[in-house]
Image (cartoon, rainbow, N blue to C red):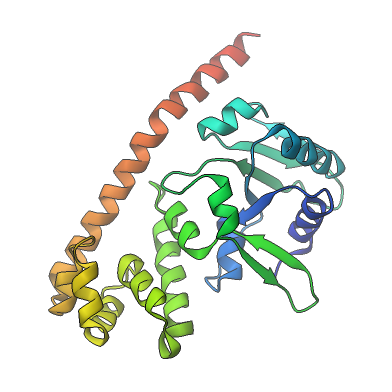
Length: 250
């Protein structure tokens, strides 16, 4: 279920032909991992023509930039998020967060090719970040993202485990974060698990049903991703602080 204010935002994005993909909490809802979110998070193509279309959509929504950075292509291309607040009376001051670059995933052209198009029961269509890209984007330093990542993978597994394709099996072995389910997949597909263990070594623990060590290595894997995300954001955070100081001096 997409709340009507978010639907209004997505309708405006579509009507203005903005090349954008829904991500964040609302994308998680559409993939079956429920999360309550009042925000609309988008990854966009950051070129002049698409940003002009986005500006027209934002003007229709009466959306204004909040905080820093300003809405400029150079900040989007560096990986910053630009934050907007909708002042239209029908949108309850909804926040829209826009990014053009995500850590650990490919450029927008690749994200667009891999996108998922979801059609709601009434025929309304939404372009969403593909599940593998959304999973990668959720590997952040934020505490709230890891339980959601776990639920995303569980929802996908339970939905398709009885008719799994080889591609899905590899995806589960690479991304599942529930120890018991990793063991289950490893026991059902030991050959695939052995091959995938070359890139995710903790799968050898799943193959031998070593629950305690598997839990430990999953925690270690999570911490490594958190640290990678911290390193990625440090220079961006320093730039944001400089922008805040410059703005306060005006």
